[in-house]
Image 1 (cartoon, rainbow, N blue to C red):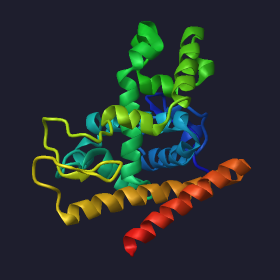
Image 2: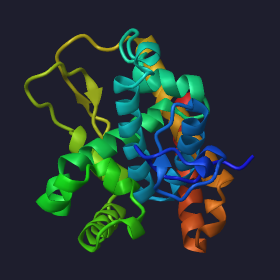
Image 3: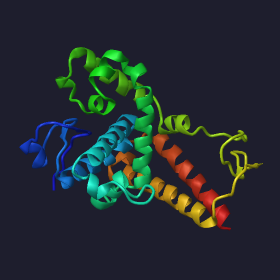
Image 4: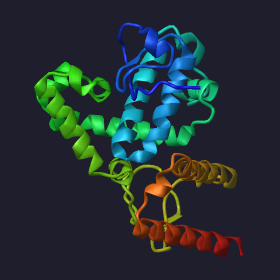
Length: 257
């Protein structure tokens, strides 16, 4: 089955070609058909292993999807529930169960962090005319020259960064205890115990958090091979990846022993 190839969601007139599974990248139509939205999201989710540009596109899609859920006819069905059970999480679980929510949430957080710098990245003129999701979604050929240049600058800038660099801006990794907040005993990057304050998480909660993160990592590895990126690696890249995976396996074996 052929799935649509658009890379983000924006409101537009319905297109028969999109409904049938066609359409141009970047021109995804906001539709009441959840199966079409799901196919488009799955397609971009797979692309997101290709680099930060694709991560941004997927995150922007989720920003738009969240808007559709909260303001459209889906609100009664998907908004609500306990904690984070409603909204995008419930929609993904219902229509895209093969998408890891923890990974999707990470991509969304990155897009939201990039949005905090959107004005400085593209300037007042472009940010006033286009939201971040809309600029990311736009076909370059449909943009005026100045906006097309800003879209390219945004993609080039983001492509020169990493997921970790954006996540660190959200929650910087620290090896020292900073006063304030509910911090807990933990080990820093050198293995030293750092005392915190507040009740530690239960073993069950920590195990669930670890399992969710591990599954997200394994999902990313699976997609890396399924999409064929492994064959695109240079010899040095393969050796580096093999060494990193062997080191991870060694560390897990030491814990198991």
